[in-house]
Amino acid sequence: MFYGMMKLSVGGGLRLAFRPWVEGLENIPKEGPAILASNHLSFSDSFFLPAMLDRKVTFIAKAEYFTSPGVKGKLTAAFFKGVGQLPVDRSGARGAGEAAIRSGLEVLERGELFGIYPEGTRSPDGRLYRGKPGGLARVALASGAPVIPVAMIDTEKIQPPGKVVPKLMRPGIRIGEPLDFSRYHGMENDRFILRSVTDEVMYEIMKLSGQEYVDIYATAAKRQIAEAKKKAEAAEDPAGHSSGE
View: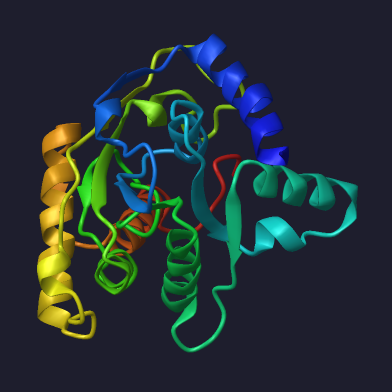
């Protein structure tokens, strides 16, 4: 009930203000479990995609969004629960991967749609990065649910880093045909199979999105970008002086 209310309010507002366009809605099954595997350009991806679908989509989100103290923290937690996101505790030996797998299987066992970002984090520069096999492939093989590739288009341009006020523009969503990996059922512990499944999904996302593909993980790219920025700043001011000195 709460999800329906949030979909009408938040989803309706997004549709009215931004008028997203969608291709491939016919590829979303009317009923039964399915995995929506999407590229990840913006924080808003988890809101635009559900807003355009008739069925509920459950994504995972870091647990910190649900445990912050105070009134603001409670409102944030209520909002994320209302839009269909589940908390994932990233602590522990295997962290978010195991938590995502458990959450995903529970959602699929209920016959619902489970949304996941194979890159594991937002793209730092708009390019498409290597998919992590631990979550997506293991959930797909253990559940037997079809994987539907999804491409979010231009969502990163709506509110770039440092921008407070979002830009009113039309983002897009392309939904590909379902991928069937039932031939690999029971092989979710074979790392070569997991890699193969993940790469096949990422290839389909690349075709849908038109993004340049980079064969490294997005987390590694973020580290490289941060290190390059530090080196550039050090080169500009090798003595460590502020610009006012």
